Length: 302
Image 1 (cartoon, helix red, strand yellow):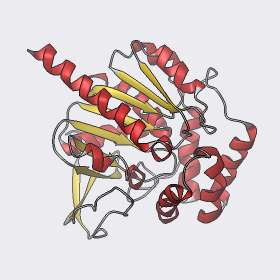
Image 2 (cartoon, rainbow, N blue to C red):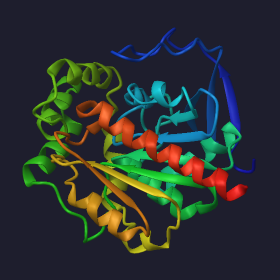
Image 3 (cartoon, one colour):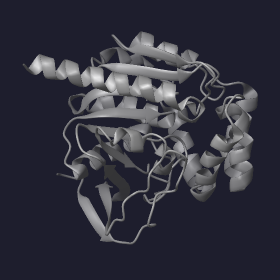
C-alpha cells in the first residue's frame, strides 16, 4: 500500500447493527478499521466470505442504509462497505468534496481490505462514485451495478423544481424535518409506512452535519461522466425505480445506452430507495447479475 494504509484503532462500536426486519446483528468488533486517503480516515467494514463486493452509499447516508442488502449478499460474497467522507465514522474534512476524491476513498478502502478486483455497487451519489471509480481504476472492477444514479452533465434528466428545492433546503432543517421532507420524493406511494420508518429511524440517528452534506452536494453538482462512459468495457447492470422523482429514470436509460453492453432493469412501483420499495425484485436482479458475471468469468478461465 502506498498513500493508503490501514489503521486499526481500539474502539467499542455498538454491540449490534441497527436492527430491521429481515436483517441480522453485526458481530461484535474489537477494532474499528479505517483506511487512510490523503490524511483522511475512512471507516469501513466487511462481512462474509467469497468474491468481494464493494457497496457505495449515496448523499448524506452512512453505510447503515445498506441494512437490507449486506446481510443477503454476505451469505455468498465478501461484502465491503464504508462511510463516505463527511458522514458516520469517517472524517469530515473541509469541503467541497469531489466525486473523484471520494472514488479515491473507495480505492483506499480496497487497499486496506487487501482487495485488488471487486464487484462495485453504488446507489445515487454512490453510483456516481462507482462510475468514477470504474473510469479511474478499470482494472479493479469485475462488474458494475449502478442504482438510481445519473451521469451528470447537460444530458442528465433533472428532477422537478419542487424536488430540487426540498433537497437544497434539507441541509438547513433539523434531522426530523429533513428526513420527512424527502419521503414523497424517494419512496413509492405503495410502500408500507413501516418499511419507510425502518429507514427513517436509521437516517435520524446518522443525519450528517449541514456542512458535510453541502460538501457532498457540491461534488454531485460538479460531476460529469456521460462523455466518458463509452470507455467502459465492464459488465454493467443499471437498476432504477420507474417512479424515482429525485433522480428520474431517464438517467438510467441514458447510462445504459452509453455503456457498451449494459443491461437496464426498471422496477415497477419503486422510487429512489428502490431496495426498500421493491426489496425482493431488486435483490433478485442484483444477485442474478452477480452470479452470471461470476459464472462467465470462471468459464473464461477454463
